[in-house]
Structure formats: structure tokens, C-alpha cells
Amino acid sequence: SLHRQFAEGVPRKHYRALVAGRWARPGMTPLRFPLERLEAANGDRRVRVAAGGAPAETRVTLLSHRPGDPGRGQPAWFSLLDCHLLTGRTHQIRVHLSHTGFPIVGDPKYGDFTLNKILQKQGYNRMFLHAFSISLDHPIEGRRVQFEAPLPAAFQRVIEGVARDTTAGSANT
Image 1 (cartoon, one colour):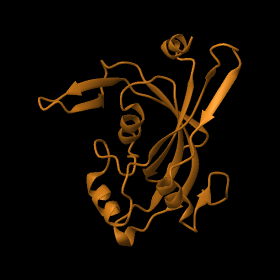
Image 2 (image 1 turned 180 degrees about the vertical axis):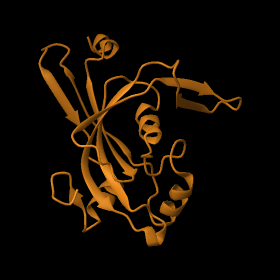
Image 3 (image 1 turned 180 degrees about the horizontal axis):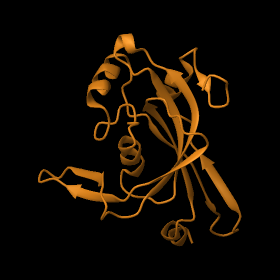
């Protein structure tokens, strides 16, 4: 039952991503970009948006904005996003967000490498992408069940550590 559900795309998977920039799209935004896998001679796997690639869709919703500190080399804004996968391609969220100009903070493959180095010196020592929840049908009972994984402490500290944080529903967004 579980194998069938995953093959048929039944589970709903949500991720949290902290990105560089001010996500200004209201409500849920579908990102539909076909993805193509590449493998370098050294075995490094990458993915890129390409017309002949496999269909991929990520639905993105703004959760909050927080100001950055350009005086310290940071972008003017960071945005916390909920990313719902409709397909499950390799590196899908990372490539979709980077392609739209909103790289995930700390992403070593698709991120802003200069910004990542600056942020690492300021205590941002990880990629800020987190598998937050999954819901699927119970394999025996058939009822819908949901599992959530709280944000890791380092991720939560970054979000809570900024007093000037503004939520998606406030007048400041």
C-alpha cells in the first residue's frame, strides 16, 4: 500500500525553506519547470531546468519575511517559504527556487556561493531546507495520517532570532 501510494503521488510532502530575497508573490505560487539530471565525469550529480526534462511542480507559499543586513553582506530580505511537492524529482525544490532567483540559504550546489561564505562566517552553517511534514493514507485503516518533524534548533534560532520579523499576513509584507 505504501509503495503504491508513493508511486501514484498520494503523499503530500511539505518542506520549509529559507531563501535569500523578498518573495512577493501572494498566496500559493505554482513553479512548473521541467528538470533534467546531469552527471559530471567526477560523479557529481546536478539538475537543471531544461525544456526536454521531466515535468516537475512545486507549490510555494510565503510564511514570513525577515530583514537581512546588507551592511554585513546579507541580502536586504530573507523569506521563509512552505514548499509543497507535487512531483518528486531530484533536488526539485532547490533548483526551482534558485531558477526563480530565490536560492536557498546555505545551498552548496544551487545557492549563492558568495552569500553562503559570508553567512557561514555569521553562523549560518547549514542549508536551510527542512522536510517538515508528510501525509498519506494509513496502509491498513485507510484514514489519512500526518507526520511532522519540528524545525531543527539551528533553523528555528535563525527564524526566531530576528526581532524585526514580519509575518505574511502583516501590513509590512
